[in-house]
Image (cartoon, rainbow, N blue to C red):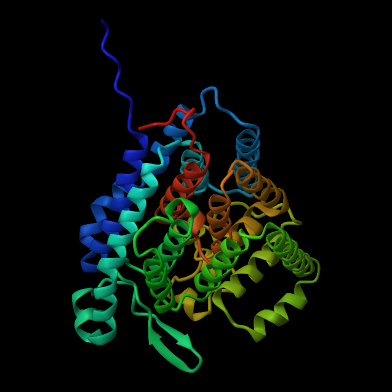
Amino acid sequence: MKAATPRLNLPGLFFVLVVLEILFGFLKKLDYSFYQVFDALEKLIPIGALVVSAMLLKGRLSRPIALCILFYGLYLIYGVLISYLNGKSSGVIFYQLYHELKFIAIILAFSLLQCRESWSHRSVTVCKWVLLLSLPLIAFQLLASGAYDSLFSNGGHFEKGYVGDMQLPRSVGVFWHPSQLAIFALLAVVLLASDNNRSIRMRPLYLLLFGLCALLTIQRLELLLLLCCCYAIFLMRDRHKLYLSARFGHLIAAIGLLFCVSAIVKPDIYAGVVESFPSPRAWLFHQSILTLLDSSYWGAGWGTIGSHAAADMTNVYSINDLSSLWWVERRLYLYDTYWPHVIGETGLPGLCFLVLSIACLCRQYVSFNARLIFFVLFLTSLLSSNLQSIFYLMLFGWFIMVTENSTRHSPGQSYAH
């Protein structure tokens, strides 16, 4: 009898990669040299994720996934084409193309991957361990900041957070940056709050402590999103209230879209807002809109503003109005926000293709919590480059997968072990 061919444990492989992302983030706090080896290997993850996606797509191309791939493919093709027409070098185009592939490769792989419900319980265990290791480190940071800074000299905790007129240290726990702890705490709360995890002992205590960790990071957007997620999960008990809240959310989104359109049509209005609120990200959005207008809405091509190629490969700081600002002189914030590079470099066609691709991918998810996590990923990209960060894409992708499969699981379905 022919021996059965062993099946590749893809959920286990991705689980190990997610744990390694957290582990080496902690080692990065101690010494960056510990992280460098993993950083080099990490760059292969999007390529591996593309291979996994191709393997999983055989015979399983649902309509939402097909449309997502179609629109994202058009976004990439348009990005290459408009960059070529604007005289960008092949090095700039291929460099940025790699960064653009991260999102579709990693999130698509997690969206296609199926797993047993037991992986949700393993994820809860990881969440507990991260919490139990983070709490002493947070106490150490708050009570003995000098010793903490000396031990973790390479941590991203040196930036203070503003609470009114006070400047307070931002907690990071086992992570390198406070945003990472805030996002992890938010995702852990969503996972623990799901119906499948109601039987976990001391669940309310874990939810409270993760909420406290998020609060101590003083990350304003993440805290707002955590409150919104908790409110949305609470409203799931009453679908009518959830529907009304969704209508209200659509109204807010429409107002935001109207503001964006007015900023494009009348950039002087937006410039006044930027001048009264001198945020680095606001200035970057403003410059991206000016770049969009200068390109007659077609886009100026990759490597112009806000992208990895612009930061690493072109002399963009000296050719736009940002060059004299302090955060630019320190080479900060150029790709700290995701959407400016889409707006300025790929114009309205690229923006439409990308938004349509993301909207189609969201329709693939059945689980409310999976859609909620995907929505949080989308919103955090307004003030960060999460959609091109392998760490955040792996983290969000894993939590989307386990919450989605916890909902879809039924005895009649066949899943990877």
